[in-house]
Image (cartoon, rainbow, N blue to C red; front, top):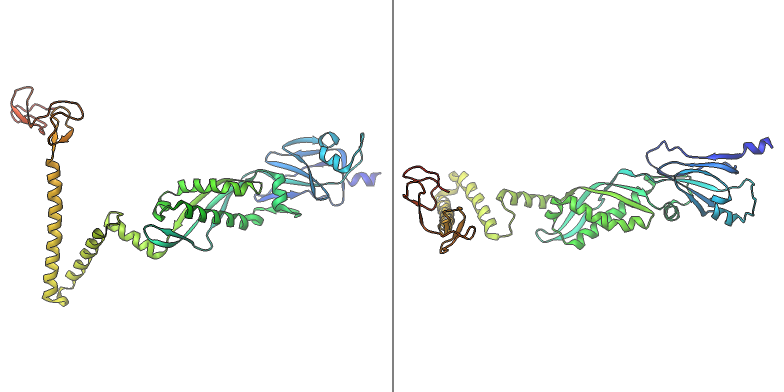
Length: 345
């Protein structure tokens, strides 16, 4: 009897000393579980009993006395009768339900997408994610198998492929430009997380966090972006680009005056003249635009030139007003009276 008692398990528990173990199979070593023995399940753990490879009872955090009252499925599978108190055998798995953070993902191959600004381009991206076991029973059925342990490394490649594939589909379906993706990584991460939630849920997992740290472009696209930044605007207008390129060509020609000849210098001068003329026209238009408004003498708001009353305060508009202190005529744009120096509203 002493020999048999030594081969009976009186308590079952698992203390996790690792950072990456998802599932741990309790080492039975041919021993049986004593009737009435204690099962301790810690926070962020789930204990699962299996009978002949089939999932039976599942226990959340707490301490349990193993008997027929809290082993209903195993009791049914083993056909235990009333008053059964004999030792029994079962496979016991502890599943870690804590979050596994700082898991890395990245594109092994470029993601091809059609962009409205640059045409067909290839993107690369990388970041990190966090997940946890949300349904231990489903997770064991879908991924675990019969291993003695299961770590994050055993599932990393599979989850990475799901993430990259889903992000690629999300980019293609959203039709977001490459520049918009790069400047809105946080918002795009949220959209990708929602898209991936179903794929993780089907495995008994929950994606708790997904971070897209960077989206990188091919070298030629990066050069095009740098060129647009140098122009000061992100515009598709061809005339702006042509003027920019022409100015660069004129600058280069001016540096090589000794070898380009008089004709080139003359052409350079004419080109500069045209650019200056266009600039003067733009400045003139801007100044004319400023004269096409009438300022309210009461609140100072700009109104259309032909307006008689202010669109902001309803006050009567006039080209000239009177100083409230000395009565001298003042311009509607004046801030101080030229006669007495009184501050005007």
